[in-house]
Amino acid sequence: MTVHMTADTAPSRRTVLRGLTSAASALALGGCAGLAATGTQYDASEISASRSLLVATTRKPASGARAKPWFGPERASAVSIARATLTPPDSGRFSLSAVGLGNWRIDAIELMPKVADAVQATSGRDVLIYVHGFNTTFEMAALDAVRLSDGIRFQGETMVFSWPSKANLLDYGYDRESAMWSRDALTEVLDPLVASPTIGRVHIVSHSIGTMLTMEALRQLYARRADTAADKIGSVIFASPDIDVDVFSSSVERIGPLARKVTVIVATTDRALAVSGWLAGGVSRVGTAEKEQLERLGLNVIDASKQGWGIINHDLFLSNRQIRQVIRRSIDNPVAVTVQSGVAQ
Image 1 (tube, rainbow, N blue to C red):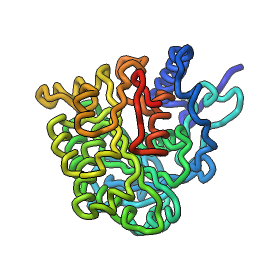
Image 2 (cartoon, rainbow, N blue to C red):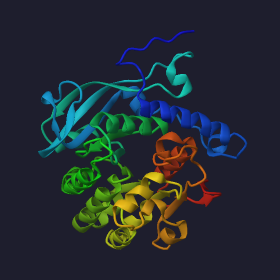
Image 3 (tube, one colour):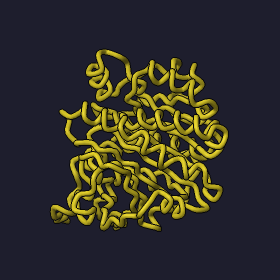
């Protein structure tokens, strides 16, 4: 059978690599007592039914967000709120998605006037917010949020918070500063969600540099909302955190009981964070820290060092099924994640 693909339907290089990684992980872990074999089976995700994604971004819209790339790498003067309409991968037996290479697609973006519209859209449900990392376009960030939500079968509204990244390996400095510049905007988005009596729990998954701005936003949110924030924030997942260990440790002390909701996914084999630490003057990053060091801060820690198959191991939360199960179980019970052989049970 021959599969013909156009430029719009062909999977990206990133998707291909993740598909191969997922397949290899399944083979490598097939003889283990993994979560996929023993864990709870979940129903279909809400996003697969609604086929829509909430968007909050500090990027400037491109062409009014009417067509690709929707939002660019430049910094906007204010946060934009929108809803993306999606098309899921073909689920046929002989489709690319059957071998892990299928991809979601953004069909349209509808801008909303204000943050309050996002609050109204999520009324009565839990919310999952994904904050992306370094070297990521808007579309990559949005589709990663969709894959994450679908992969963990999340039942609730999903939102991507996208900060201005140039999506270039040589622009680490710009990305890092853009992420920090966006921390007030993320707080602006989180605050009404946490304050709303009609919304359930707010769960956050942050990757790489995104963990840095998320921690800053949580500090501001806890200083402003205290017990309300501690009650309404559900699970906070820091996947491969690209943040200075000392800075992170001092920030943990500032978020009070929210620290008990934090799960950190680390991997000493994360090559991307090794480079990041070198660029930061040799200061270790949280994502490569020893598990015991972070546990002393009162955090849940998942050591994924033995879960990776590739040479980078920086996005296992998307490419590895067992790590996705960790995230799901953390969301179900934010303070009760335990670890056995490096994987949550």
